[in-house]
Amino acid sequence: MERFTTSNPYETAFGYSRAVRRGPYVFVSGTTSIDPTTGAVLFPDSAYLQTKQIFKEVIRALEGLGASKEDVVRLRIFVTEQSDADEVGRVMKEAFGDVGPAATMIVGAHLV
Image (cartoon, rainbow, N blue to C red; front, side):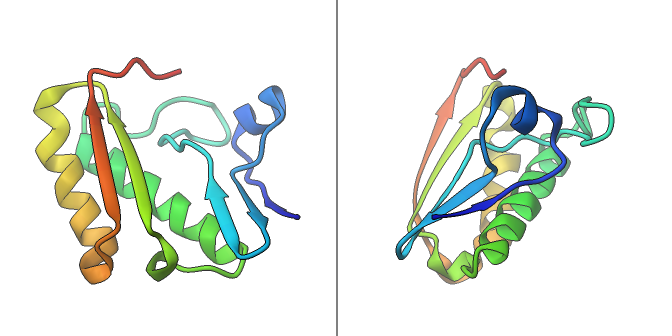
């Protein structure tokens, strides 16, 4: 088993890895746009920029374990506000283009 970790303070505090490779599979933890130094949310007023940062981190984790966005088959996206859903979806299309993974967006989630 291989692990990919970042400087996100919650990984150390809560004891988890950003991503784990087990055999041919890579599992990526729930990812938010957190400043690794301060623990503060990056871009608090922009769902678009937060989502861009999140997918950048997800793709970096995949690549760190020898995978790529083309290997993604499933996305689960949690959005706290309905009004942000279109912007989040727009970034998903920008980030994954023609990969077309199966995806679910859950609105109204309360995130840690």
